[in-house]
Picture 1 (tube, rainbow, N blue to C red):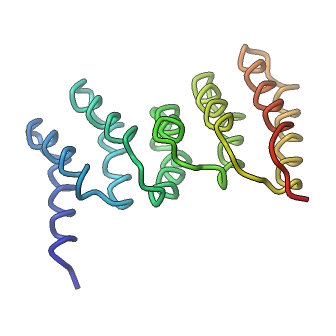
Picture 2 (picture 1 turned 45 degrees about the vertical axis):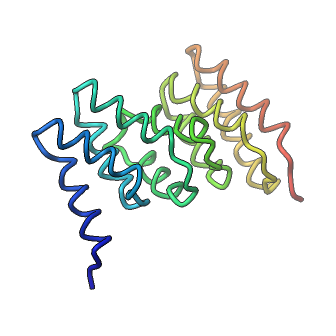
Length: 176
């Protein structure tokens, strides 16, 4: 059964796809109050498809202001979705910009750094520098092994950043 709240959210999501820029900007403003984790995908789709500076800036400002930890799963899902590859660095940066805790997704971040471009690695480095959690030793050791392998095969300046990430992993709090 659909509630008034669901209907309002569906209408806001529908307005995100409008050809009228004013309607889109208004929808983005409404999402600040009425948005939920279900709003992440429509927002990210708009970010990837819009070429209008004002809309892109509004979306990024909204995403950087996220405070609700419940959006974490949807953000990680968007980060790993290849259709959003063009905005991967921006999506990763949301975690440190918004102070969201993505520590339970450390493996995803490291995988994205290994396969991503320079800017993705910069953002992952910043995200994991801000982790304040305890990690499973076995998971961290596996990640170090993966990073060592990637560093060995990397021929660009990205290698230096991967080495920095590797050093951060050495300093994480571990649970044995």
